[in-house]
Length: 355
Length: 162
View (cartoon, rainbow over the protein chains, first blue to last red):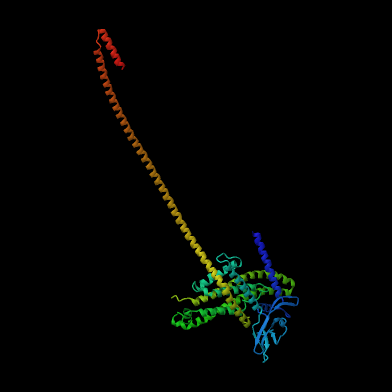
């Protein structure tokens, strides 16, 4: 019994170590430049979005998946081409190039008539977009097959994938939606709450896998969390009843306090989704930065002497294994917190007056 | 890092909206419905099981009652039967006794009658015999005393023999 447990732990450790090693290897290319290894650039490079999906570097050759670039500007019109045209950012194509420095570093820019470097309207299928779309396809496939399992076996005990996901679905329904919104009104919001939970959870988990199709920092990107928070804000505002708006514009406090409370309440309406956005973004990005920081140690010490690099890699792997488990927990907790707070805000908006 | 990228904003909004719509229609709706139905079914099953249990208990109770009733009825019947048996025996006995009494009485009566008849018959015969003896005595004229005595003795002997 104990022997098998130890064996299982050993195997897990081995697998996780191998995965993390492959990650560190695939990242090794990022931070290297003429001035040697720069951890800051290395880390930023990996948590930022990019126009191609870097898989690994063998010798001097970058292996990456080129992704479609879709651009529009009034001067140049529509342009659609593969990011491989840039040759990993070294070349310009049709007047577009990837900025190497400044505020727009890593983005596609072009020189306008005034000679300034400006951004076109850019709806390229970047690495994050690809990862997001892959996760959406996985979600569609998983949950439609689960739904079919429910239709195929009505009233019977769940099996397989259905059995694995049912506790989560029930958890969202009973402990998140019902408890925050109330028995009467929760059903209308279930599609959104379930979708947002599983989208965030799956993308958090995929972010922990170091190789394709994982490894993209989707939920750690502020644009993604902004949209999620914005949707929660829109749903909350559209469903807000008299009671909800009444509390905001005419809070039940003594008249003397009203000039103070009304602005606070109004700001609160916007702070709630803002906090949702920042919390998810910051937590996931922080997790990625910590992992990348540990890996940077290998290269920092490796630059001093190869032996030190190998020595530190053991410690790094130990730390990252620990962090990976912690991040698994964070992946769930952040998905849960986002969903729970969204449900809570919606619950506040639809709550009936009770005084 | 903290500047939201337009492309990602756009694609997130579009893909998320599509996914919410499709999952809402083809996944969450049937899943939620199935879960609800199943919960309802389970609730129902539990309720009906409880009811069945109560009914079972009632049935058992009534069974016991019936059994008890049957038992007491049987006892009653047995008691009645025993009583009937006893009365019949008693009646039979008393009737037999009465009958026997009657017969005895009849027998006694007939014996009495027979006896009376026999006695009267004997009396009649004795009378006739006396008359006959007297007649014979009278008819036979006795020669001597000896002969007379002898004759009377033989007569008496004759009577005794009779």
